[in-house]
Length: 132
Image (cartoon, rainbow, N blue to C red; front, top):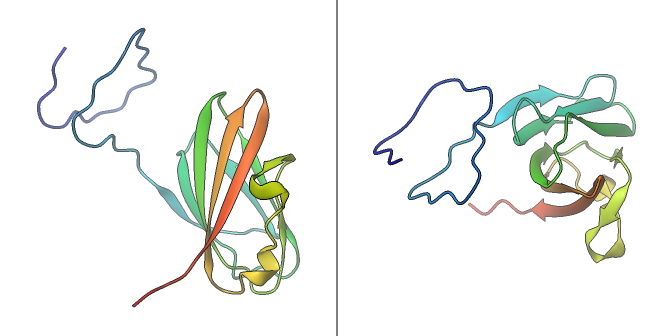
């Protein structure tokens, strides 16, 4: 099957047994403009694989939870700093054997990558530096 141009629409599930060759971009919308509520944020994986959250309104340490995760999938969260507060993610494996200290982020940005493999999360967090 060959699609030229863009295919748009709403689909429940597309299941393919075999390879998919793609020329161009696979577009998956970003779910964003979330605000921490009571110092918590639920990353609902059914909304999007890429989301962003503004944590600047936090009043204390917070928690990020995930729901509806799918085995073998990678999720990305753009995290807008929380001042001097830390956040806790669900248990999992961390890159470089260390949990990221969000208190060092201030009001900056970080990218949280969470892979869900074998029923566990594997995390990588990178502090971003704005260059004008």
